[in-house]
Length: 228
Image (cartoon, rainbow, N blue to C red):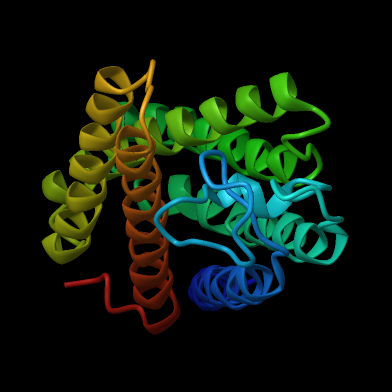
């Protein structure tokens, strides 16, 4: 397959994956029966009191069945995990100027593929049934995505053929996930609804920052605008 054609296919798949994730999770939020950790009697999903993972539980916090919402949410994770795989595979073909760049691009691709598998893993492990496995997959996914983006960002800034714009977008996401890590450390042993809300909002910022980052990279690949 022509490499430029593969660029476009990979980019389009990433954008499709991001859009489907947004649509499916939005529907899952609408259909969520209700309840949050500190507010079990609520009748709907709260953007500032419910984690994304609440959408994937087989039962909602209010005790009602959450199968429909969970099916949508878990499907969204499975889809985006599959759709970003081509992005990672194409990485060594873009950054292949010199032995060092080739070597680290292969390592970055491997890390990115692990992240994809972890996203799929999140999608098949509802948090209220497989709590330990779910949290492991979440940690692996965000850690690997973080490492991949650091390598990717460095490559972009040192590659004369790639627009630095995409490096700046990556850098914004790196800042978001770093701040989220700080918030997690500060409020790991949360005790109040307010502290829990801070954790939930931080998660939302990280997830949507990652989606924006992925969509921009996908757009760049699909239109070849990442090339200067």
